[in-house]
Image (cartoon, rainbow, N blue to C red):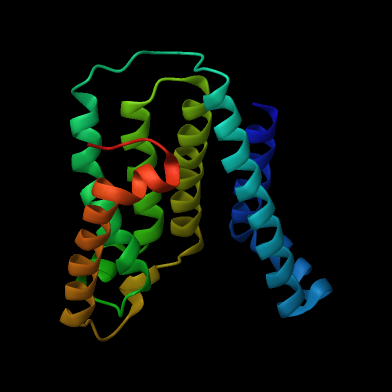
Length: 191
């Protein structure tokens, strides 16, 4: 569990830097733009590797159950995951009405993903992992609002194509995860 905790601290800590614009600015000034991006990327990758490895080790050691979710919560999880994939694609697709309305689709996707997985997993490692990401998402969204970052809402032109791409590709990814990718990547079958 130590490796999972270390990974979460590194990954979420690095992703919390934008919440502190002064600190981020000083780091960019010291390292340069490319250096800052390099350190950010390497630290993110290190954190992610530790999270994946630590979570896998915790699962292999046997779950320390904090709560035992009823079977029906897995159905809610599957339903909640539908918009997650659409929002993830919307974060990178041309600005459409989805991105403009949501403002920060990636953060909303992370919060829904984390909440959905907390509903279906009651072991200590899952609560740490998904609870940590949910907490980060909530704090980051509050921070963005305080900083006046309006995200996708600032786009003057909204593309229906951006919405179509988000929905079609997002639902395709959702189907791929349900049928194949979740088992292949995570080792847990969805259906």
